Image (spheres, rainbow, N blue to C red):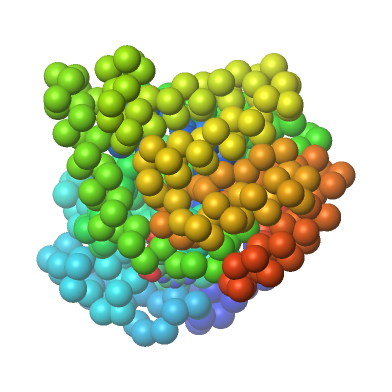
Length: 372
Ligand code: ADP
Ligand code: MG
């Protein structure tokens, strides 16, 4: 699969001379949403859908990029002088953002021809944007003479993404993409950036269903929620809600979500370590209820989809990512997974009138160089 895609990129770049390739996976977050930007805990995994970048240094000080999935040619200055928010086509903002963030870190980005190709569905909540920004940052960082460790790449990729989109995202997606481990979920402490890979039970499958509703409000509402949690921390006189306890936030639903969600992530991690499969589903459902009732980022469709998962025999399910549309992640016994997925899709389709798309995902290793 990857070989064929590398061959396609090689064709698009007129042959293999001087080419190198970097791959960065998308991610699904199993539990812990809207906690990363408050120094909290989350538990994503890198998935077997990824972005590949092929590139070759050129003369002339321009970074030219194409995508096998999206039209148009991006052409930005290698010195970082282009404004990432005004590059056309729009996805070129990620290229300009990656150049800028590497230049800001002292890198000298050479002229480059590059082509990207991604199997992460865009706009679905599986973080095609971070797969792209991590792949670009790693690939360009390599050519710019920078020695970046995995966390440096994640931070620089987040910076590139914020420059491209203006959305003040947290670091979870990029950390998951760089630190992925096959068959493991990743417990991430967003304060220290410590990452603990924890084996996923073999008998459990991870299922993702897109609600068929795009996350249109996600950018603005995300920023609003984030600001509300920052105000709550300020009111409490603490640096972040990571340091709040439940008593402190009893009367603030947004802050209460962050505090209870952190506790659920730690309980979920403990259940994985203890191989307590029975504990996983209820924690997912409790997380969804908190995102729906306290954090108010669910939608009727996401709620229906979680109900459909449960009725179809899943262990549990929750909205994943920012909310306001996008995906639900569910866990099911592997032996039942195909049936659970079919039934979930069927129930959801007839209850909502929407057209869902479904994925079974595997945990894979994180971003790195591939190919010749
Ligand atoms: P998500 O990260 O949930 O998939 P986003 O809206 O954050 O959704 O990111 C989607 C954006 O990422 C696209 O609009 C585009 O700018 C960029 N992108 C994703 N996949 C590709 C691709 N194959 N080629 C070029 N740009 C892509
Ligand atoms: Mg994204």
